[in-house]
Every structure is written in C-alpha cells, then in structure tokens.
Amino acid sequence: MNTLTMTSSCYKEIIAYGYTQLPYESCGVLASSDGKYIDSFIPIINDHPNPLHYFSFQPQSWIHTLYKLQHADLQLIGYMHTHPNEDAIPSSSDIIGFDEQSKPLLCIVSYKQKDSPYIRLYQQMPTKGMKDYPLVLT
Image 1 (cartoon, rainbow, N blue to C red):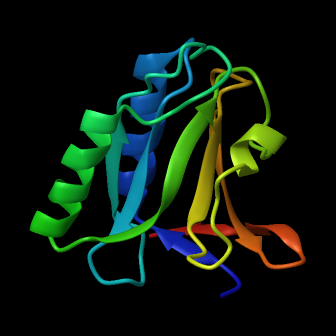
Image 2 (tube, rainbow, N blue to C red):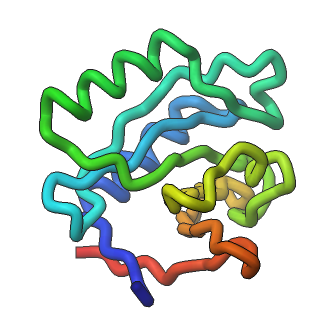
C-alpha cells in the first residue's frame, strides 16, 4: 500500500466536523464499505479532561460506533483526531496505545491554519515507526 484513497465527501465531512469542535480536539473513526476506499467517518465524543490538547473516546460513544459499524457492514480502517493549533504530525501521546499487529490508520487533521486545514494519514509499522501515506481523493 503506497497511497490511500478517500472519497471527497468523507474528506469534507471530517474537515467540517473538526471545525464544529474547535478550539478542542475532536475524534472519530474512519471506515470502508468495500475495504478499498475510506468512504465513511463516524465522529466520537471526546471526553478527555483536557480536550484543548488531548482526546479520548467517550466509552458510550465508542460502543455506539462499534454497533453502527457492524450494523452498516463497515470495516474499521483507522482512528481520526484533530490538532487545533499544530501540524498533522503524530505526537508521542498520539502513538501510545496503537497496536502494531492490527495496523489501524492514524488520521490527523491540522487546523493550524484555520482557513486551510489538511489531513495526513499514518500507520504504525513494526521496527519502522510511523509511516506517512499520501492521500488520494476520489
């Protein structure tokens, strides 16, 4: 896998949701209906005590999301969160807890420049750290 493909509508939905949550970090999951394209985004409530700089999934929202994925027959592709004032580069706290074996994607949206937010996708690779994937929109 050299690039990742996301539908334009999903990209716009992610960006729009992040705007609604500023100045706080927001989070959610990326999913696919066919395993090839990222075509679904499901927001999850951030219940971290310090949402200006961190995120954590609210347990009830996370459970609801898992049911929604199963009911809609969607494949979980990765986890998304925003950086309201920083670049879309994983911090050490972003990486903690990511399982190398399941290889979920880490999607970070930067709102550092409020008028031009952008998304970057990463995957934790054994012994290689975080790999950055170019994103192609369809």
